[in-house]
Amino acid sequence: MSKLDKEEREILEAFESGNLKTVKNVKEQIKKHQAIAEATFKKDARINIRLSSRDLRSLQARALKEGVPYQTLVSSVLHKFVDGQLIEKNG
Image (cartoon, rainbow, N blue to C red; front, side):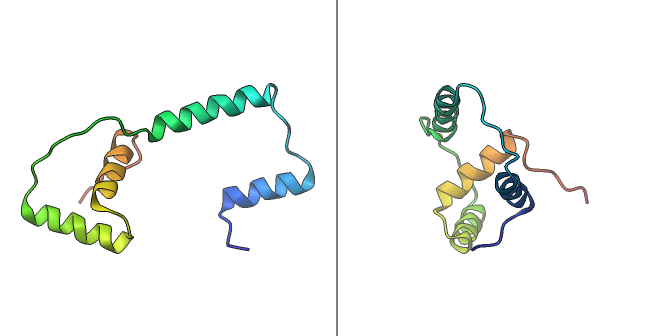
């Protein structure tokens, strides 16, 4: 079994101890969350952006290191930024 993070361990422990509760309207909740997930990951818009050659090479190198296409890396970074998940470091 792979290592679990804290949240995953808490969920597993709650499941094993019988402390999880079923939500009302399970099928409706599943459909709702599936629709949200599909909308979140739907890529239906294109942008064009001009970057310096140096920045593009750095992005491509970082993406290669991460094992993802560089466009995917750029999309992920932008998504995290607009979602408030990226925190600016001072200094």
